[in-house]
Length: 308
Image 1 (cartoon, rainbow, N blue to C red):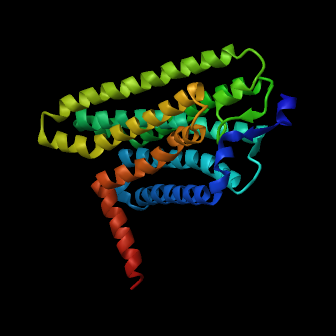
Image 2 (image 1 turned 135 degrees about the horizontal axis):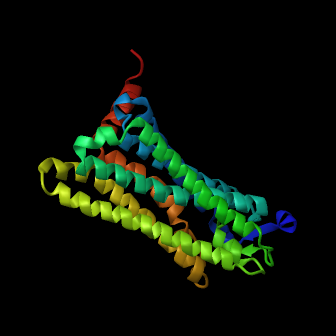
Image 3 (image 1 turned 120 degrees about the vertical axis):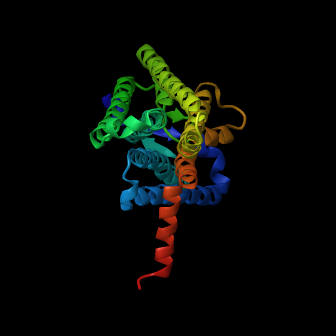
């Protein structure tokens, strides 16, 4: 471990992009600024409007905050690398980026699960919703979301930092747990087992979400109000789940089977789970939820008119 702390790792994923560095930097900076803008706007709308201080919007605010954390952990290092000739990162910096990235991933799954539970209660048990989803219950669900996400990440990081490294070159544009494991020269069976446990756990979470949506669809088709509530509040959540799952699946496939031809393109696509969901989530919720659209429109109008 002491030897690892003094190691400087080389990120080789940007080697093919040196000739277009200014273009890639401009695109990355624009994407990051837009990510901060759309997430910050939605979170501000929820915080400033007391009418939006309801469980669904609180959970949405938490989803956007988590997406902003994950995107920041990726973009800030990427922007520095695009301004530099040496694409290196210290071992501590690599582990820190892994910690931020995987906390984002686990919290995203947990947040989507909690939001599915909230929508299940709202659509399937509307008369009991207020009694079941109290302020204390919301706070508890948020606490559990972050607690279990951080716990999963801490265990994974603890397993990887114990491994001595035999190489310093990582064929990625950002650090990942699996790539760091592949640089080790000792038995990583415990890491593989833990990865399998996490995969089963989050597949179970996804199955629970889909199961809850089965009940939601059955309930929603029975009445016009149920169908309207399902389309307005549940469809955006389902889109968020599908976008995030597809993005994460591509990264997992690239980590294990990627490389070779078109490595630069594969690297860029592998970062999709850190780029696309943080942008898509606030956009689809902002467009689909009328209360948020109204609040943002009034906010923009008042700022354009200025003080009386």
